[in-house]
Image (cartoon, rainbow over all chains, first blue to last red; front, side, top):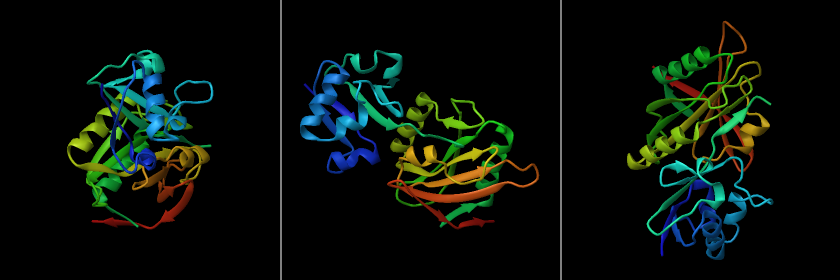
Length: 93
Length: 135
């Protein structure tokens, strides 16, 4: 089973520079736990202490933001592409 | 140093003025690795706020996918401050996640002048750089 995961520039330190890695799992949560086995430290950049998706990280299943699906419980399957993009944000204070 | 054409400089300032008092934000894309800002893309501020900005997540996804397909990268990421100086704030620094980008800050706090400054932000460190506007 292979799910393609696209990694943004800033997280490629966890993947030896790779912009794409593969993983498996039946939900996003499982997929991230699987990726952690081979890319230690990556999961913590995506998932907070409460087990939820980090606020300023966007995760897409194919081309949909998973916040509009089931967040980390979103089911994933062979052939899906998961894309991670840090949110572009900021403010005055 | 940020080298940018007068036309792109003017587009950033015009966007900031048009959205004032909300913060305006956007990207100038260029060929990957070239450090040349070429293609201006104004982005929606999904927060629509005078003190915060965030790219709409779907719009960001489509732009990043398009840049990847075109072998482009974000060369400039700009946003405006509408009542404070054109200097990166704490959230600006924490959320800066494109290490190769020039972070342009524009301030529209004064009616008759616009501050336009550029920075590199990597690993939480801000370094201001000169801006060279090419006619």
